Image (tube, rainbow, N blue to C red; front, top):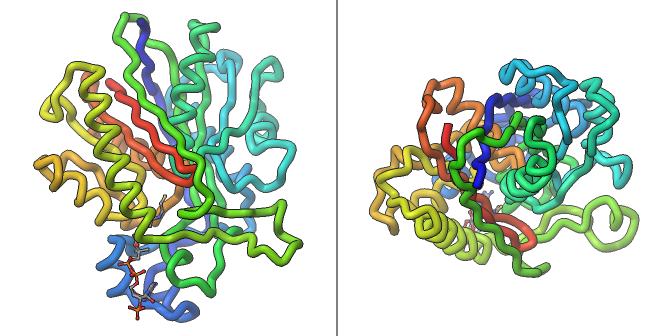
Amino acid sequence: MKGLKIIGTGKYLPGKAVSNMQLSETVDTSDEWIVTRTGIKQRYFAEGESNAFIAAKAAEAAIKKAGICKEDIACCIVATFTPDQVTPSVACHVQKLCNLPENIMAYDINAACTGFLYGLKTVYGLLLQQPEKYALLIGSEIISKYLNFEDRTTCILFGDGGGAAVVKLTTEEKGFYCVTGCRGDIEIINCPGITKAHTDIPSFIAMNGKEVFRFAADAVQKCIEEILHKSHLKLEDIDYVVCHQANERIISHVYKKLDAPSEKFFMNLQHYGNTSAASIPIALDDMAKLGLLKEGVKTLCIGFGAGLTWGGVLLEW
Ligand code: COA
């Protein structure tokens, strides 16, 4: 069985960084509360940029890094729960903005914060049909458009941004280790969004923070254990666990429970907040730029989010 390899990453952060202190000028909160409960220090909010623009910028950076010819891209998949409009998809806009070939499939997938991992499994299936080609997979969000800035329990958590990866099948039989899951639940976290924008139902993100926390801590641990079991590896064999960057306390809860060193669990949420489907590709891009993703390095990417959805993918660099 072929494996999946990321050969280039890129990211784009729109607008400018908004610190907790700046947020506390308009929201009843404080830097101390946010840092203690979440680890987040700042986030980016788009200023005039669209989700498609953010996605295209991240995509161009990943394509440049991968050094591939755009003609060799077979599909453009955007994981997002915050599209600019219902249709055309963000992916179709990216096709145009990035001048990608027309003989590709371009579409969005919505698995909220697990979107990039659902996307990896999706492009794996697509690439099996065109093994000589590349997939362009993007996680991109403009969550600020869906935030209620009068709800301090949610608006302090999220940020806008995009991360992208150029993906191909491995030439060797490496194996593809992946878990995905879903449990329909509208109570714990939901976002009615644009289709409900003109009704009396609030269109913003709403969630039960404590329930989300409980679900996430459990899902992350189970995904890690399941992938290790499938791949016959131990946690010691994994160089980095790259969790969806939602909350420092969720991540630290997991490494403490697994009795693992904190350094194994990459964290950059302090800079960006929770960027949902973009958080894992942004983390991978930061890790690449820090020189952490040398050839042979094993990363276990784990996501969880609204849906409820969860997933994990083992990647070797
Ligand atoms: N600033 C200051 N005070 C705040 C606040 C804010 N931004 N948000 C809530 N509070 C207050 C509450 O009003 C409450 O005050 P009270 O005790 O006087 O009623 C107090 O802080 C505690 O609130 P609570 O909701 O119990 O806090 P918590 O410890 O559960 O932390 C979260 C809240 C959201 C940080 C936490 O539940 C969490 O991280 N959940 C997971 C969220 C997540 O990651 N979601 C995305 C998943 S993809």
